[in-house]
Length: 536
Ligand code: NAP
Image (cartoon, rainbow, N blue to C red; front, side):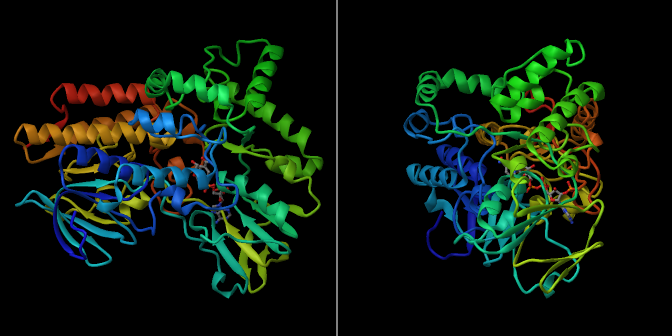
């Protein structure tokens, strides 16, 4: 890509976003000899790991799994320091990758893509940015991330607050020192659960405003065991193969037994073992936890007992215990000292179900019961997940139809990769693919590889465009929905269901058929000459 300030550009491909997905996509397209440009709103590369700098931000997937597999030299040479990597280390890794593979020369930072419009006559996309770029590209690839569009805090009178407020997903780069402060954290999802213990240790007082309690499993984070690292590195190819063929993009110990068929003492022992091991594997302790309400209840009961054993005040313990949705149907959280933090004298849990927030005040916030004096408010209220970042760009396909219009009743894609009416537009880890139910890097690499191979196929076969057929798309949407409804997931008011954003259609958005099964399906589509697509 030209390194000048030139704004009118002609490229083979525009890639939107410079996170893990955008970087690897660029690497692949360059390898094919395409001219590709990445446009990124942030001042640096890293996507989710660039923005989410809140205290305690850490990946819930283990370091040896949560890394690129495309370069053996990279995976052999890079050394992770902890079992679960913290945000600064992951950001350092992404920057290392950008330098190591000389990617920066094709990345334009601090530039937000505002629109992408398909020109039917030319069969090309016109992509515009907030810095005046006007780019003509054959392909437009959305690498915008599933959890990048933050949910804006819409609390009455927020503008009257005289203290400082922060969103976990847009944390200040210089960090925040809460020493001596009265802090309020609103929300108790993964971001809150990671940051609360650290803020509690720093602040004078911490008020946690909880609307819905979450299930959180201990991380048992530790320095990475050098023996484990050695074993994985000696067998990395096989380790990665198993991850690609697994259900969630990393190997979790499976148990083919039903929670309801084993004796109560065996069941309790299994849960205890998983709890001690820590991490996301807890929800696969038995094969029916995510499918059968009664099985799920046994896991939830174990959880309730655990919380009661950690949290000294029984009322607080009860408030922290989820009761309104099955375990695992909202993203399981992984923590370090979360529940124990509520034993601290300076921490107060406020149950918003009983006393909702009425409004923000100049010096804090008011619930239906009382005023809280706060110096800072942390909004850990999540994201307009999966569709938010895509719909933030004014995308117009055939006949000028907007993506917003096409998705008015919920996202519709073929394989989570492409859409009828939007030729040569690809979505990396789009809705309808395993994405957020998987190790994102495994899913990102699979999608970027599929897209690169597809573009290569088009070029070597003298084709100009590829477009999903409406029938294939409808069948896929139905399949995603059917499989989702075989599980307990749709019962929760989760961001998977779009339920966290007022007015958003209630649809189970990711594909839960499993990473390995999904990959096979994509490969079959390719093998059958792009079955379900029209090539022109
Ligand atoms: P989240 O899971 O959507 O949690 C948002 C929290 O804010 C929920 O407790 C929600 O309550 C609450 N909330 C939202 N609006 C509110 C309002 N108006 N008033 C009061 N409470 C409100 O968001 P997140 O914690 O940022 O996590 C999002 C996802 O990012 C995670 O599920 C995970 O996939 C990913 N993530 C991963 C990691 C990791 O790998 N370590 C870390 C952080 C995030 P309700 O439940 O009642 O809506």
